[in-house]
Amino acid sequence: MEENESGLKSFQERVLNMYVEHPEVVRIWKRLDRNRWLKRMGSESDDSPIHLFIEGKPGAGKTQLMLKYLRRNPIVTKIDEVGTEIDTRPVLYMKLPVPFTYKGFYNNILKSIDPDFPVSQQDVDTVKNQAFSLMKALGVEMLGIDEMDYLLASTFVQRRAVMENIKDIANSAGVCLVCIGTFEIEQLRTLNTQHLRRYPKTVLSPFTSCNSSFLSFLGELEQQLELPSEFALNWSNPEGAFAPFLFELTRGLVGWIKPIIIEAFELIGAMEDGFSDFSKLQLIDGDILDQAQKNVIGEFADEDIKKILEG
Image 1 (cartoon, one colour):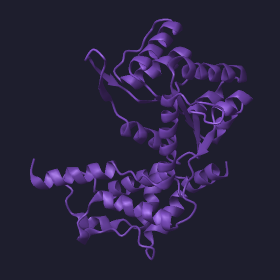
Image 2 (cartoon, rainbow, N blue to C red):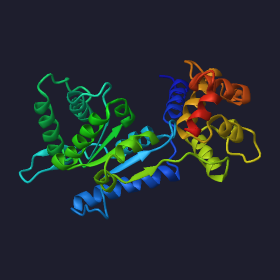
Image 3 (cartoon, rainbow, N blue to C red):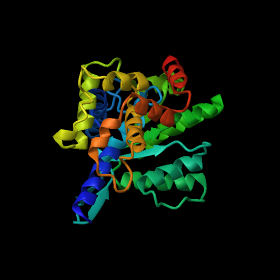
Image 4 (spheres, rainbow, N blue to C red):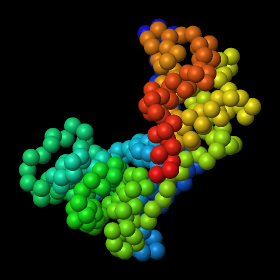
């Protein structure tokens, strides 16, 4: 591969891999680290619960927060007492199956261990025991369960049963649980007082204004692109128009900022094969950002965002 092609590929990969560990993300990651430490120390109590509900608006960045945490805690190879190498998996991430079934739930746990794991057609208890046994064998400390909102379509009776089933994972597999969803999943957390004690919640909040924190966030995104100084975008310039307009388009919801920026790069051709004129990045203006927002969120983006923020 020629040097300019290699450099282009590297730039486009950096665009796709942009991620800023802003203070809200770091705060929750530290809490997840602490919960795992409490579990290892055997210090779980009502005063120090090791499970967590992460709630937030759609587009707040909850899923990316958990996926990045997963990548921060990859497979660790350990050697047991007889000298055998064992690949441990400290953190797993899964989504609730749609529609919800118990067999689908346990199969999703197995898929979180290995995406190529074949879907088991055995009875529910067999799949459950296989999932729990593997989690124990792999030293799993934490299981993140995303899209808990899917459960809200179930009957009240099934919701209670599934939450008891999820509690059984913590007890039988010995893991910290992280339940992830919108504010609607508060209905699941408050089904009974036992859940309230076991599952404290935290909220992943969006940026509240185009303030110094938001400008710093944009500045870090631009740094990750590693553009030559002559092609600097100056997104974080407090006197510029880019930051306030992007904040207006996203209302500070981090989960939409990156897709809109990537779409803006797409619209000016920066993600196409053969792109090499970085001066074209200056073509990203209000019209491009506005179109990128509509492409990502929809033609009625402003109305949809308003409903999300007011919901």
